[in-house]
Amino acid sequence: MAYSGPIVDAHMHLWDLSRHHYAWLQVPPPHNPAGDVSGIAGKDYGLDQYLNDVAGWRVVKAVHIECGLPPRDQLSETDWLQAIADARGYPQAIVAGACLDDPSVEGVLEAHATRPNVRGIRQIVNWHVDPLKTYTPRDLLKSPRWREGFGLLAKYGLSFDLQLYPLQMFDAARLAADHPDIPLIVNHAGMPTDRDTDGFLAWSAGLQALAGQPNVSIKVSNFGGVDRSWSAGSVEPFIHQILDDFGVERVMFASNFPVDRVHGPFGAHFAAFDYATRALSETERDAVFAANASRIYRI
Image 1 (cartoon, rainbow, N blue to C red):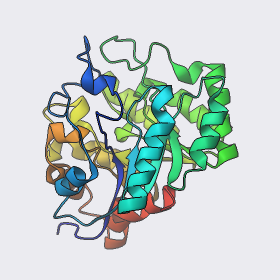
Image 2: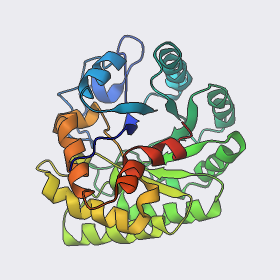
Image 3: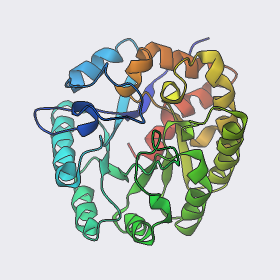
Image 4: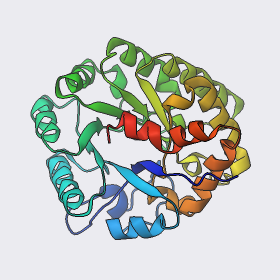
């Protein structure tokens, strides 16, 4: 039977192109590691559009994740989102943007932390030897300055949303072990972008290393970003692996809308996760669809 309980969407985005400049949406790049985003590029995506996309499902809360703005706009993005939340109720949690290797980042973290709905920080750290897949020019997880900035999150009670590739997972697991007081939330199922056997083994081993740290949890989304021909059947083994490694108490459903709308409507992403979790108990399904995100993001 399909899950019919409440949903806390652990990963979604909003943007207003008249307010901020999102280079990845507005400037045609020579390549985009996120794939073809032409279906959402150059268009605003507001709260009403999001609520329309999830209409028909009981999405009772949502977590907004920063949208890749430059440092000068990161606090402005948070203030814009906080104003929406104050007026409309959504998003109930905000994961703000910050550049942890910036020498002045502490002031940014302190300012973000004063906004009522801010719960954490994300800085995309995906680094890959393939220039068509890398998001960053260097591996930030290996940077002493970046790791120093990461350590400041505990001071301000902030979690970290971790978007990375499998070959970075062992470094990330060591980072989590060094900072047991900072919750880390792995984005997009760990992004198994290398689709051969070696790539799967790297993802599987790295995932187990991360799961070995009790302060690490994971969100399931964006399979279409690494497999353009994804289906409920193709992603089921990945979701089962995640559940086996992390347990039902540290796994969260997420839509990644509107980015994942490029790969199908909300119902398709919901159905794939619903199908993969069909053997779980009612309480366990409530955990992965809602309760875990409420607890981890403190909403």
